[in-house]
Image (tube, rainbow, N blue to C red; front, side, top):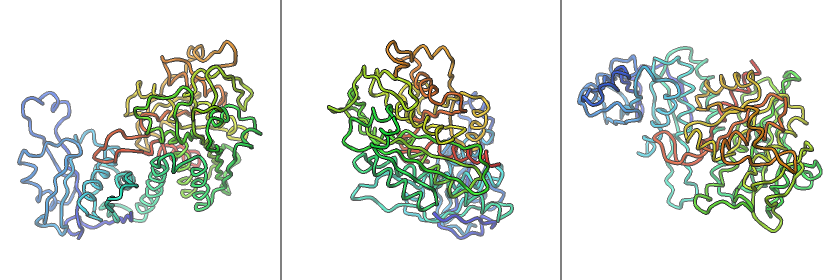
Length: 505
């Protein structure tokens, strides 16, 4: 999608469709108090061009527009405007409207217009948000909205937006730079979603590694891929214990970004779980919903996408991306509950549940990242159903063993506009992963399941500053939303890129 920055007056721009946001000026608390008294919303368009509100005066005063977020109204041949159409999208309460909401409104605009066969449009950046922040949000949101997952439908319609014009004010060259950076991030998020969307017969560990290698060649990253023999040679017993049950060979993917002029430290390690299909192994999952377990490699895909964005944005900081890719299958070769495995670190693990496999591959991935010299670690994984019980589908779970690295990540997360919530790593939870036969168990039971999994991973991060992202509830959109298609979300990529950039500041 080509993006253009324009300082033109909205009414004077010729376009297939002009998009403007309508915000409710009423006090949200007062609106809630009077919700049963038929109070009309006080809608006002977010634009400084008086010609645009004059077109919508009758519509907004009619009482037909509720002002609820993402409500759309399309006007054809709007008098006084050179645009062929005017799309009015409700953004909700003006007092609560932020760039987080703007991203979603931009996605809504794309999905509304492309469903009508429209290929280009212009978006009026709301003056209430700083211009650079608004441009970034609009571009990222529009790109996310432009993605659809129906690759293999024989009747798939070629519906996409080819060109976006953002109408704003300010320093055009600076805004174009922001738009270009946002394009890289949005494209990388969709690259991640593309990987996650593929079915497991078309996204084996070998294919995932090939896609990663091809991407690295295109953007100038170093990439190595190691197979089963090397994994066993390096004594990655936790990783191999999962891989041994599958006929598909595993792949240890190592991507390195080492820009000239970057300091020797820090070296950031991005470690992703790459289970390209998860049956649960011998502790097999129920059949209902198992088809979605193709997305169990979303953490690994996120790290591959993040490395793509980092390579193109070129921050002056060293980054190593590691993805442990394998299937988790039941077979005569598969590990069994009660087995004891020895991780790369030398720690012994009693296998209680073979469906707690993600933490096993990450255990060796985290330790290997430290062996490669990483001084700060972030892992991402669709790790536990327990995090969905705790946080639902709205927030990813964040864990950290160090408050300083958490505060840095939290700031990056806020700038990226992704919802995440910190959960505890208190010493009391260590009791849950103790084993009577080995150093630890791989499953600490039902209660506090997401925390137990994080406590397990902390044993391999040890004292290295470390963030763990459990994205099990947010990596896959369970329902289609106005701003995003049902399917892979690409969650955490934007936050990771902002986090990495913060070390280059």
